[in-house]
Image (cartoon, rainbow, N blue to C red):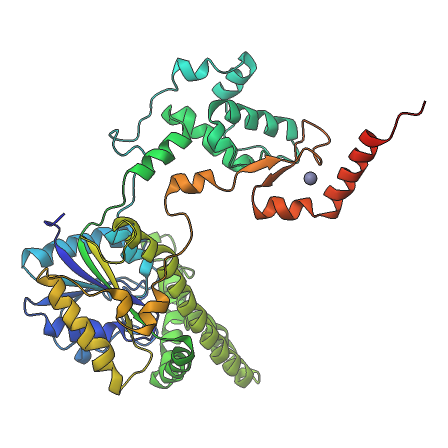
Length: 464
Ligand SMILES: [Zn+2]
């Protein structure tokens, strides 16, 4: 573990100052540092306003990799980025410099630091063997026939309930643990579980249990900074930034992007150059909202369209910021906790909240100086402060979610149980998820009516 090489990762919402912090921190790292972009929009070339790229003079000579090198309509997915980022990081480490990964696309960062666990890890490559005779011997001859000829696509439970139930019973016989998770009407999940058994010869519940034992590991010794601002302070800043982007020429970029579409469409047959209007930069906040305005611009409706677009871009930006925070809380922090066995600071990974709620005068004290000190301790492998003690924001934000962290814990929850009262026809069992859903099901009018009718029938005294 100690041999893992160090990286710094800065995440947080849009407009909170991540790029600025990356550069300021890089300038203070004596080994030298290189910034790697982890923002899905900033990988596209040009269009500096719509993508919020840091102006090159503000990069202060710090190299920025994986930035501005894709064409606007090009599809670019997480796997490609992870591969390219990992290669770039190796290069930076080989020069004994420190990589700083920075960007708002937290799930990219997450996949980079915590590589996917593969099915069948520990037993070599995913196995493709046949199910054992031992397993198959549990099946009746009808079940065996069905298992040998699983349909390519799952049938619909409403048009073929008998078929759906037969598939469900087959799964119950083969892997009761995983069958308990699905409703028999959920033919997509039932069919997928059966296919895993047919194709790998292994039970889905075994695969899940094994994944739980394979502890999540970090690819690098990682110091996360989560740059955080209270929504009440952040939202007006985000609004202001939208206005600023418009002043700087956002609409020119929207027109440019729209313009890219038409000339390229004329080169028919040359698929390589076709700009996909739904991909990449065309998904960016700002483009979507002003697309219509640009079309209406010379008509009488344009003023209203403009105001609507501004409002809608501000709303989208706030919503995006909210989603970014929930990703960090619900995915990133749980992963850090798993790697560190329940702690926010461990041997390989640590996460700190930096409070950027107040800007201007407080930035140096609350953000930069704190980050710089922790970075120095991290790089020199000295002991690190307790993240929760760092600021009131850290204390409230770094809370451990109560969700199950391990896949096998998740499997043990949300089991479906058959309601004996509502299941009038044993071939059409009514299944309800245990816990809250079961509790509220028992209070439904239809369940209570049936329960009453049943007890009336049972308790009515026989007439002499
Ligand atoms: Zn019921």
